[in-house]
Amino acid sequence: MEDTFHMLLYRTVHAERGYLRSFLGESGLGAGQPKLLVYLEGQGPCSQRELAEYFAIDPAAVSRMLCTMEKGGFVVRKTNQESRRSDFIELTERGAQYAKIWRENYKKMEGIMLEGFTLEERERFADFLSRAYLNFQTGKGEASCGI
Image 1 (cartoon, helix red, strand yellow):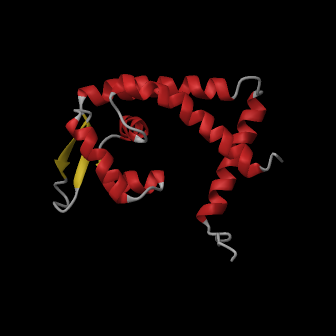
Image 2 (tube, one colour; image 1 turned 60 degrees about the vertical axis):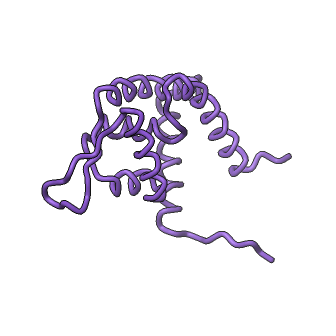
């Protein structure tokens, strides 16, 4: 089979997820939840909408993840005093502890993925990925079934 960009990217993302999935059972977190912890650790309390927009995922999916994380003691919801129609999501002590662990897991994963890359290659690779993502964000082309 030909190594198209699509397949190369798919295989890389699949390998990344497989590597990180091995740590999920230990933490009690579900897929997609650790990245929310790490974001909250770096950005501080924020709204559910901000999380959904940053990660470009469905707000309902974020709501389900946060519900599970709240039950697990990783986050708490606090009333936004400026707009009582929305809550702020904040890390608990347990959430902050696991955010640090996951940040380290992400660093290890990046180290494995980028082994043998020079600093210049890493910077160029990051630029290429950023530009590819921007192309999707600006809506260049739509998928079709082609029937």
